[in-house]
Image (cartoon, rainbow, N blue to C red; front, top):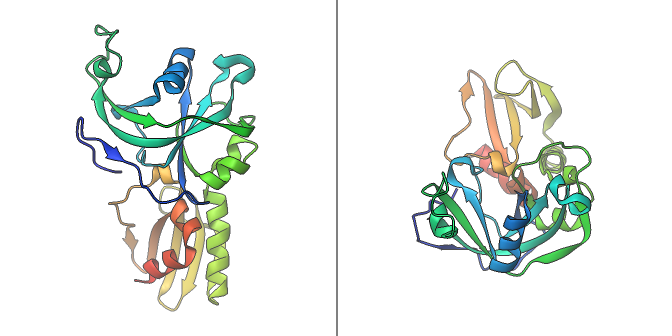
Length: 238
C-alpha cells in the first residue's frame, strides 16, 4: 500500500481508465456519510481498520440495508482525486468531543459521482466490507459476487499455462499453506509449484511466498494476472 504521511496528499494516477483500472468498493451505512460523499466529495476510512490496499482510481459505494429500497446495492461511483491522512476532528470539526476525534483516517477526496446504469445488488453476501475490483467488472456486474477477481484470474492463468505446453491442475489439494487447495498446481522437472491467487485487498507486496523442500508456494495478485498473465508467469520463472 502507498505509504502516506499526515497532510501530504497523494494524487491518483493520471493514465486513462481502461478495463483493468482498479476500483475500491467501500461501505456507507448512514445518510449523513452518504451526503458528505455526495456534497462534500470525500470518504473516510479508519487507518486501524483499512484494507491492505486502498490505492485505486475509483471509489464505489455499497449502501447497506439501512437505506431501504436503495440499500444492499451499489448505485454510484466516483473518481478518487487524491488521498491523505487526517484526524477525525479535522474531518468533522463540528464533533470535537467524539470518542475517536483524535483517531487517524484516510481521507479520499472524490470527483463527481456517476450513477451505474444497473445497480449492483447483494443477494448472496450478508455482510460486505472492502474489496478491490476493476472498472470493467463494476460496469458489467449484476451482483456483488461478480466483482471478485480470483475466479476470472484463475481461468486466465490456467489458459496461459496450458498455451505454453505445461502440465497444470486446478484446485490441487495440499497439506500446507493457509488454504486446503491451491488454485493451480504447475508440474515440471524441478518439482511442483502450488499457486495461490489472492484478491487485491488481501495482497501483501513485501511478503515473498515461502519455500518447502521441492515444492514452491507462489502467491500472485488477481488484478495483475488479469492485466497480464504472461508477465506474471515470466516473473514466476525468474
